Amino acid sequence: MKHIAAYLLLQLGGNTSPSAADIKSLLETAGAEADDSQLDKLISELEGKDINELIAEGSSKLASVPSGGGGGGGAAAASGGAAAGGAAAADAPAEEAKKEEEKEESDDDMGFGLFD
Image 1 (cartoon, rainbow, N blue to C red):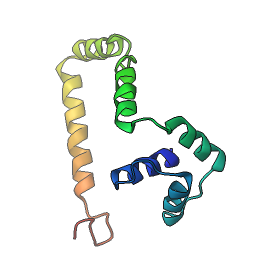
Image 2: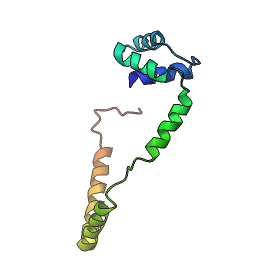
Image 3: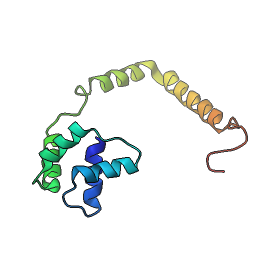
């Protein structure tokens, strides 16, 4: 993944066809090591291809991959349980949420905060 990221960064920087040496140099600058076998494979796979076309092709392939849940079965079961519990069950989570918010706002940060 780091090889692809370095390749894309070099392209964004104006190098239209980054070489293996360019990618190695960038990775070394960032303190990472390049894997020669993966780098050679990447360079050979991308040689002579337009990266924008490859990204568009990959995006269209990802669009066809299902990424939803199981048809809402879990949501239906959860909402049915809440309806069966009545108003008392609905009030309990609200009270717990209030207690958690108060606890988060307490001064457990040892005298300093993230944005102080």
